[in-house]
Image (cartoon, rainbow, N blue to C red; front, side, top):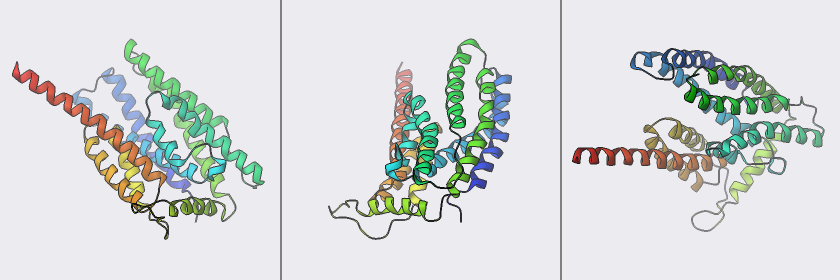
Length: 283
């Protein structure tokens, strides 16, 4: 059984992007940057499809970093995902998560003389550069009225992402049997030595990761879904804390951080709205 499902990640990205990107681009061009009521039937499916792509990619980040042993990786899986949500810092961090992973993986393969295909370092580097330029272009587009600029600049990413996903999954699944299992066993051993609430090592078998995955996904959604993110963030915090009581989990830690960010941000937004309504009513 392969470590990472190439079919799932590849076709999830391709299928959802083929639906979401044209719909969002059409909405931006026709509405000139404004989402009016008559465009909602086009905008909402496109937004949902691209939101799905975002969640899938963040889980993908976690999976590829989880496959590298700690001594060969520049960061942990939890940090790889969590730090991507730090404003402005994410411009630097995306280079570490994508291009940095390719560099670390190729070095790891070379040091151990594994007979597996190398991952192109140019593809993730191009993804990072194009992504940064597209974000800046979207800011410029909002100021100048060139709303289609960012969408057009993002088109090369739609081609490069499947290439990177294909290469990463193919190379990881080509590693000799037991290599990734040994890496995961190393991480699980560290989790079993975690200190529990009673101050003693938790011990026992590694905990199931269902709540970790749920907390990570909900943590991501808590940031990208307006206002409802407050509820999703609270659920992510609860699930991650339950998982962490059973043993340390980088995925649960990432879900906890993202849940706190989403809860705090939209909680503050809702508080500001309530205060504004009260003040306006009083006048």
